[in-house]
Amino acid sequence: MLSPDNRRLYTDALRPPTGYQFTQAVATTYSLDLETLLTVPLHLALFSASRPVEELLKDGVGLLESLRRTTERVSVFVQGGRVLRPSRPHTLYGLLEPMVMEVAPPNPAGVFHPKLWLLRFDRPDTSDVQLRLLVLSRNITHDRCWDLVLTLEGQPTGRRRKENRPLTDLVLRLPDLTTLGMPAPRAQEVASLAELARTTPWELPEGFEEIRFHALGLDHPRGWMPEKSGQLAVVSPFVTEAALEALAASTREPLILISRPEELAKVGAGTLERFARVLVLAEQAELEDGEEPEPALTPDLPNRGLHAKAYVTGKGWHTHLHVGSANATGPALLSGANVEFMAELIGKRSRVGSVESLMESDDLGSILVDYEPGDEREEPDPQAEAARAALEAARRTLVALGLRLGFQEEEGGWTARLVPPAPFELMGVDSVTAWMATRKPETAVDARSLQHGESVRLPEAPLPLLTSFVVFQLGSDAVEEPLAFVLNLASDGMPVKERDAAIVRDVIRNREGFLRYVMLLLAQAGEGLWSFGSGRGSWDKARVGATGDDSLPLFEHLTRAFCREPDRLSAVRRLLEEMGGDGKEDVVPQEFIALWEVFEGALREEERARR
Image (cartoon, rainbow, N blue to C red; front, side):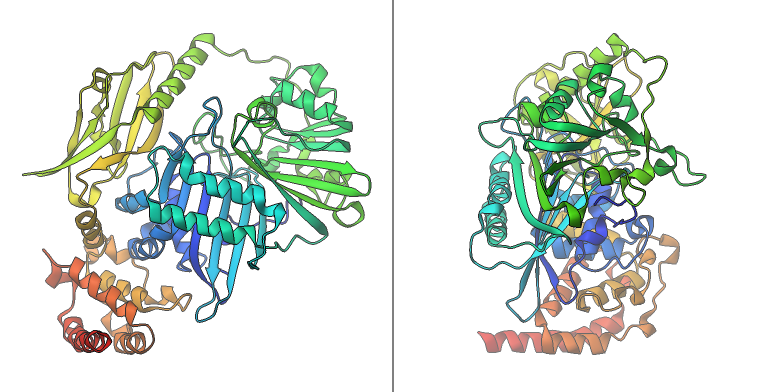
């Protein structure tokens, strides 16, 4: 049922089915890493092959074109203030701005916590549409936790299906939850995707006969529990005593509880004894041989260990498997304060396994060991806990404040000012710094004067590095680690078109990069895209002047595009317009310009004929 040997890379789950092309996607997440999001379009556009993430991030040309193909068609909704501080700056972060919508839950006591992808793929030159739904326990971050993903595919029929209503209710509500609002065209696209999902029958995993969805925390918050059952297993990285007591009371036999040791240490012995077995991940399941643990993304977002959430119940002849985002905590299950999403699969016990079978060697049992409480429980430092709580309160204040970012061109470059709507107070915060996510932390400025209602000027930046993603770092003398996060701020005066063109010129720095980019514009999905070179020349100044022109069959590809997909030539025309400016002669080969003039003339004739 939950075999740890059945593994799949997150990004592979986003790749279009054979014969289809990516059309549109909606994603929800509690936390978001911009660097991880940067690589997602590569997989949607079939530009990724099977290359390591580190290699993908160095390929500016591939990243650029995949972003330009997908940015307007992907909407990612994330809890406000939970975009993580990037581990390194990147010029292309600015192109992610339209994709990222920060949201707030209806109940201010909760958080926006669902984790799903709803994707549409179309088969070219046909009316065939295929949807894919990913229900996950994982955020859009780069971590190596043990997570769960349920992948469902289906084709819309035009006939509404009542089991899909909770899914479509959640997706339809997303634009209303955004803190800055959402452009009407993008909101309409989200709504159209939701309506397609409403009419889609899903192909279920082998052995399962029925699916139900549960969207929690949207309206009239109320608690949610798996239905009364004969047996129960709980898999949850985060737990609270009250939620575990309620879960144990919902079943005749609370058989299994699987969580993190540090979470179980917070729960009373009497509550743990309600479960026949209490287990944790075996140490060898967390690290590969010889591997050292990495630092956590943030204190509340560990990147190792258990992160999966599942509730398995036995009812008569059937097993119910609930997977999704809800932890066994009060805000998720008892009060309904959190927005969560769960999928419930139902199948006969004889076909999908029982609650007890989770402990078998070919299921989760192979990576679990019994929990053994430590001799001493580490007591938290009250002063440090209070300081962290103050930093979290300050984060919420900045998220809800309505800060704006004003851009202005000056003699030495572009400047941006953080502008607060009014004075405010950040209690228990000793330092506030801010910088653009595309730049290094060394460019940070002291932003404490925002609290007095004063604007704060960020350092001058070149045009390609302008972005509305601003990193805020809050510090307290009572804790060693500051709290850092990114806000996608409303902006005034951002020269978006000019900035995007400057990013193109910044990425395509030499002839090799230019020619490879043209080939990506002309290539059809999936056709040997990496045979056109690594693209590293676009970032490596030492290789300026390298070409590789002879290996690129440009004439054939231009001719094919003109005959079959002339819109691809319009993209080449746009690229040439964006490449105008300093250094164009060093980047765009004269031989290409001469060749292009032939196709430009043919394009104009074609356009005149259409008129």
